[in-house]
Image (cartoon, rainbow, N blue to C red; front, top):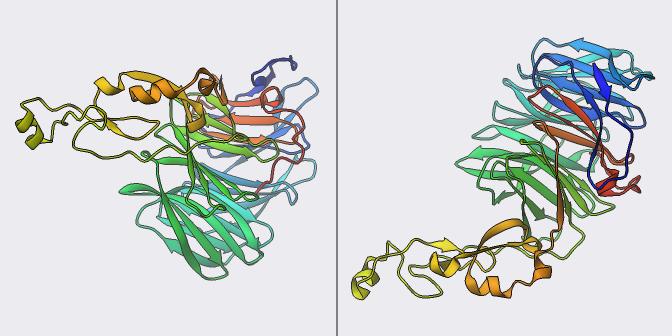
Length: 415
């Protein structure tokens, strides 16, 4: 079922410890079991499996449970050993796992949605299970009674969900939804009411993942435009930081509060570790102009200036460092600028290129290859372990301590 790859050599990249195979369809979620050599997986093949590491070093399923519908989302709470599984039919099912992780007992079914469940959060303090689905709503249900507490409807379906409990009966969540543009909606949920705090816009592609850091009140979002945005919610000044380094859709995020690092994974198998413990600059807003803001040559829609000067109009570009509208001749050079989040070379105007020093091009992130499709990732930061899974039906367990450090016991706040 699974193979132990090798021991832990000293290196500066993630070390593949084990590879688990056995699912017959895409693995939608995988969760490391804290303080145990075990993994919980949910799959489109309609199974929930608990894999435990045997003396041979291989992982074998100690629990194999078949569901009525494909499993689309999962949330696991280790202290109570409760697991919530969202399904393609819209139901959320709750189970309790035995102390030895060899038995899983059914608790109840929550009729949360009318269509596929896309994300789940469980709040032990509130005894709520919160979920989003393709039926264009977020629902929150009481886990004691199984009753629906409330629903909030959108004009389009939501794909991901993150949040933190403000009090036993109050929960703040961030939801991504698709409606004309790509929007993150911040909601405040209370016992039977819901209010919109604000909406955030910035991505140019569908948002696939969110991560909420409750201490500094930072929200991270990853999207199909291959970028990550950090939203400084706690600063209340609208500050955002752009991170560009992936070459495919960003699928999963995890922020390590103790070391101020962000781990991100993309669908092409890319694994990135971003240093967030540095002073970074906000990327500028792109300026609009009818002519190049360097040489003043008209752009191709500026008919009047083209006629007056008897010249052909030029195509408009933008310098990624200053945001000015420039022509191709005035922005012929490329440069990385990691302090602004550009880890690969981007277009800059000639004057900005000359202002960038060699030390300004020093990378503030490390990039690694997972060598399989990644649609979901989770971490056990106390042990420096990461698990990845995806549509290739493979689950991989990684030792991340060579790239994120070893003293991480208090660096993770699950929610």
